[in-house]
Length: 526
Image 1 (cartoon, rainbow, N blue to C red):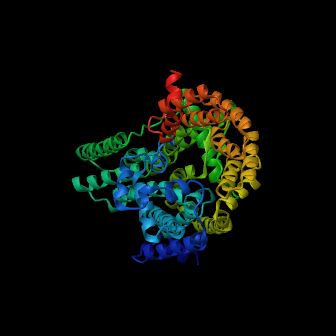
Image 2: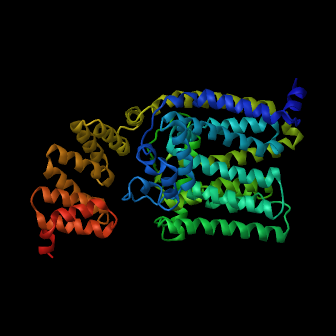
């Protein structure tokens, strides 16, 4: 029995990729199939429902000349530039005539494709069963479910798809020559156009490189450099700058990195369903030293194994852009997606090394059986979670059940009430959110509009005045302050706030309209 098991796990067969493909697709359907009944939630409203770029082929061109979130809201401060992701969403919009099922079906297919590519990359080193087990583990990982359950997670899925295709092209297809290098350059450009953190891809290709001559490497990375340069040219043309975080020193960045890595690892190991609300990470000095020691141990242990080093570069490298962007403070589930693929590569290389040692080969049935059990348990957990994403109310109520003090959840519960014109409920939710996060200016921006609607102008003025002390460069807050001051008859302050709003956001139509409404009264006041 053992020898038959071993032969099945190791022997290559032309049918194994097809068998694996069907198994992984069936698993994806079992775990995520009921997502097609869910609606659109959270950022989906901005990115999909209110996005004019998705409505026609002519307007889709704006995805390449405008920031992703500015397509539907020109005043949005986000620095995301992800035109390839927008094109993918536009395809789903056309396929389903805007119906949510098309977006969710596409997300399911992308999750299957990514797990299948992971299997194909690991198959040569790990064998059929080992590679299939790790691919299934990644497919059902609870912390990675968010990008499949949430249509806006498309950017993370596409980024991973193009990175996996690049590694597959270089390591499995192994076609050499100028044309092959151009294909890799194109995949790099597509990955960057899906999400900014794909900037790590050229480094990954170098880590997985083996046997190439100096001339070939020079040609390949010249093309990679050109692809990255083209991305930044497109980004600059769209007037989207690239944030590199608040860490002003090497020590600050390293501190952020340790916090991001620790959070990523803890979320990957999380055995229970998570929530859409981000985590707040605070590592003390002792905790940072422990994590740093762990990382040094990983690097030392992997140093003598080239394949293991490559997997480690992926896992650890995927946290670098996150540390630069997130500043080590806020970490959502989707941020674990790319690092968890790197961890799968590390585990795969460890398994491949173990397979080469006769004394460890007899443990293969136990390892595969344990992996299978973990996959089943993870699949049950994720499948049970999919109904939570049915709509905004259900999603954020589940988040509140997990964390009653979540400011994000209270904010979104309030926004649901606004859409349903339940003004009193909205105001109550926003007040509760601000009680837990008094400096959350995102809640204030929505809350002042509701209070204005209810006639509680004095409370709204006090709220926006405090928020401006917290974030004095927020053009939206200045606009809201101008509207409120106009409402209470304080024309001078209304003019001042409207002018500041226009200076901070020159393209803000609302600020221009407010100044036009104030008219000569602002001119008279200087």
